[in-house]
Length: 319
Image 1 (cartoon, rainbow, N blue to C red):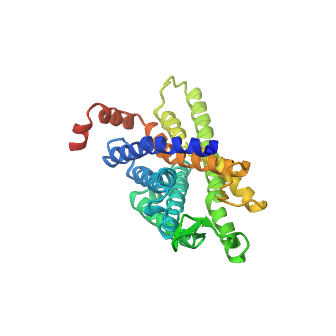
Image 2 (image 1 turned 90 degrees about the horizontal axis):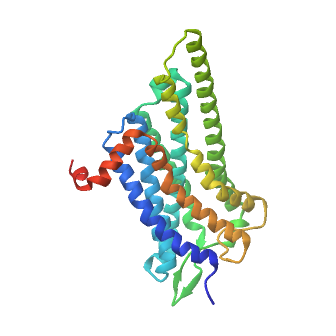
């Protein structure tokens, strides 16, 4: 009997994602680290950190978990303690990536909408502190995940694979933790990113409208106003909606688990919820390939650096 369709898709999808996503994030990190893209040190810090977090998501979730489960099911990585540790790291890096996106969105909101706070908050030092705090609490928050799993099977007294304990959905302590985890990721990031982007776009639109009115009153004929051009570029940087779109299915899955009798990782691949859950994971992993790259590639100087990498990779590395 053949594998379920969703598993066949995953067995093709995840290797392709790894082949594309790893170099994309690595190249993004290298280019941004050279600081020749015309971006501020603060923005560069955030983008490098986001790309690094996305890279770790691809390594841990896509390669060490998904690809290993599909092609090397009997490797040491499937040993339950190792599997539990890897999944704990997966969720830690996912939360880190998500909350760095929130932090970056907030930084752009302050930089564009509040000139008073901009000089104090939007600095390289503040960015470094925020990144460190986000990474620390992302790991700390997910430590309990290690104790959520039990072996799916035991062979010769050796526990294999990871299966969510049934008590995870019934124990008051675990239910409380699941609610807290669901609020922190993805509920709160969804609300914050949508709100901050909406406020930022509103500010940009109103500011541009006022500026056009002033130019009209002063009979200014400059069609390439640099100030308005900078604001248009700022709107391009608000592409954290990419995160919203690619996380939407996982967001709905989280809601279903909270308010229905459905459970995570049931492994019934004929069940519509399991198919939706697996599809959400695939889209979530795709977010780790596209998020930072979309932010960066919207900048013309980044595109120039990227062309240099493609044309002269050895020269680029040695310089």
